Structure formats: structure tokens, C-alpha cells
Length: 426
Image (cartoon, rainbow, N blue to C red; front, side, top):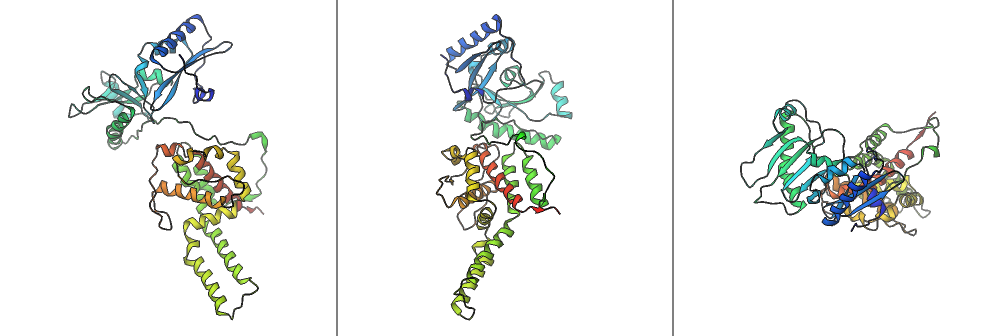
């Protein structure tokens, strides 16, 4: 029997470059055959029928989750039925498939291979460069055109290159994690070798994962352009634009936004220092001739010149307090789905939680602390104050896959800093 997940789960990442075929007796029969085989293999699926369209979405296992395969034409259905799709699973984290019975895994490559390497592939009988291991206990490797089986699952138009990895029968893969481990050990080394020999950067295509929070944007019709009234600092604006255009690279985006904000640390931390000194000097009881009052002033000066006011964490807190009001910060977080994010997924990136309670008077500092800890995880440094070294956050890791909301928060803070520094154009 088909398993019925939510509608949102079925629609995630649906391809938009495939036109549905008008329903016909042939399409209906083909989809019924696909459904029958899914039932026999206990695979989840859903059949959708509209006025003129008919399709089936088959959920293929991917670790503890599943990924959808859309079938909306007779040709697609027949291609799927021509293979034992019941024995294939997706490899978690990659655009790759693994056949559970023949120990063969295949992964799509992101770059077009050029020159000598491509000529070697085309001239070979199999259309692939096959590399035999030095030991029968090691996997076979090959690079070439993607297989027909993969194209059934990949749903892309045009030729693509792939890397295949086949383990010997004596060393069968038992689960997806073992496939990933072998891929990262042998496949990554091979691609690194290609880069060195032919100067061709080649990488493995990663799985497109669903973002846990969808950040809302403004509609174009909500506002209109006007002649610029303010000019902004060039350096942070350049970093901000660089981050905005680094789509698909969340670690790079986060750091660029962070650097845009960091540009203003000296300015806003000095404002904090001036406030402290001004508080001492404006106290009606302050007397320059009293040693105790002079001692209080000296203590405040020491604190601002060499103390906590000039460590990075404190400068960040001072900057955020100066450029964003607490209400403005809370409205942004609530409007962009952070209330749901902080119910659980936030822990996959950083354990520090931000409370959205209206009575929370420490919202600025909690935001600053979370962003600061994430920055330390990305650059793998010890935090100020001797609180230990943070675990390194790697590209393509599970942590990075959930970083989207924090990147948007960092973008918002950087934008507020730039806005606050704007100077009227004369």
C-alpha cells in the first residue's frame, strides 16, 4: 500500500524542466505497473491525477529519509520499469545511487572534463576510464558518462559525467555510511589527482537538501526605486555584495557578512567606551580632587583600553546593540520562521539558543553570542575569554546544511550596520 506523507514532502525539489504528458491508457497502465512494483517492495509512492495530467512520485530510500522520483510520461515509466529500481537507494549527502545487490555506487561530477582526460574517455571502448586496484579487497574506480540507470533517477537533460565505485563481492557494502566512507577515501583522492595532473577542478555534486526555514522576501511591487539619498562605506558594502552573490556557499556567505559587520567594531565599541566614561564624569558626585573618584575614572579607562570592551565578543555585542533595537530584532526573527527553528533544528548548527520571549532583555547579547560561536566554528578558533576551542564546521556537513537561517540572520545584522553608517549625499 502507498504511504501517504504530507503534501509538502512530496513537492520538495520537484523538477520544473519536465513537461507532463497528457494522460492516456498507456500512461495509466505504465503508472499502475510502477505502483504494483512499489507495493511489492514496500516503497512509498503517491499518484496524482489532474484534469489532463497523471503522474506518480516514488520515494527512494536515502539513509533514514527518502528522495522523490517523478514519473509523468510513458517513456519515464518504461525506463524505470526496465531496471530493478527496488534495489537502488540514494547515497545520503550526494547526488549518487547505490545498488544494494551488486555493490556498485555512482556519483555525478560537477565539472565538464576537458582536454586530454575527455579524449581518453571518448576513445575507450566502454566510454569510461577504469582504474583497477592493487588489491582485490579494494574497490574498482571508473570515470565516464553517467549510466542509463542513473539518468532514470537523475531526471536531467544532457550528458553528464560520473564517478563509479564498485566494491568486491567479498567486501559488500551494508549501509550508506560505508559507501560514503569509501567514496571519501578513494573517490576524493582520485579527483584531487585529476586536479593536479590536468588542472581541471572536479567535485562531487552534493545532495540538495531542504532548508528547515524559508526566509521571506519582499515583493517587488511593495516598493519603488528612488534616487539614492545616502552613501555607504565601500569596504563593508563590497563584502555584503560578495556574500549575496555567493549562492550555494553558506560558510563563505556567513564569513563575508560577519566581516562586513566586523568593519564597524572599532567605531561602535568606542561609543560604548565613551558612554562608560561619560557616566562617570557626569555623576553629580564626581570630584576631581577625590582620590576615590579618580580611581573610578582610571578603572573605566583601563577597562576600555585593555579590558573586556575590546575583545571581539564584547565589541560585537556593543555593535548589535547600537544598530538594531530589540523590537526590530525580535520582529525580524518572528517574521522569518526562527520561532520554529529554535524548537530543535538550531542545535544542529550551534547549541546556543536565542529566546524570543517578549520579556527577554538579553536578546541582543544572545544573538551576538550565537553568531560569534558560529563564526568560531567556521574558522576553527578559540573563543575570547578562554572558553575552549569550537568544533570545526566543514563544507557539505550536516551542520552546514542547516546554516541557512543563521546566514540570513547574519545578513540582517550586517545590513543594519551598513544602514546605520550611511551618510546623506550632499
